[in-house]
Image (cartoon, rainbow, N blue to C red; front, top):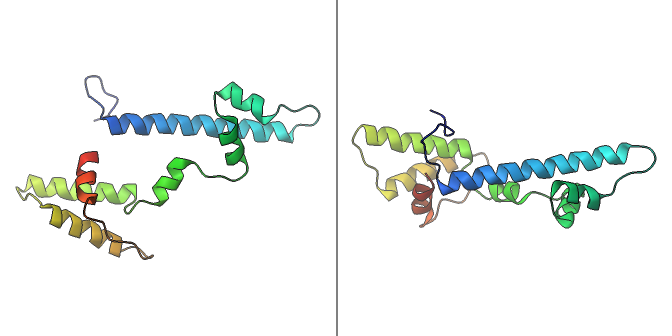
Length: 138
């Protein structure tokens, strides 16, 4: 079932994610246009004009062109679980509920920490408030 289907209400989180993806796409389009412009010979349009054309902040675009990182990419790098791992956890919770096994917050936290322990790099275990926030998001 597609989230874009008529009659299905999107959560505020999903709406924000879609808005962020559109904004990131616009920023990437502006960056690509600026880089193509710089490869031209002769008169070139500047970063300010391209930023204005795309409705983006000049300084934000300048930072990204000079190797900066999108805020959404930075925030993703701080996550305990990556999106595919979150979906594994959501599926686990759903399958447990289908079997009439309701998981406590401690069980969910233990399962999340098990997933984190499987990473090749050292990861911090999830904190006290993580499960509540996770359940709110999903």
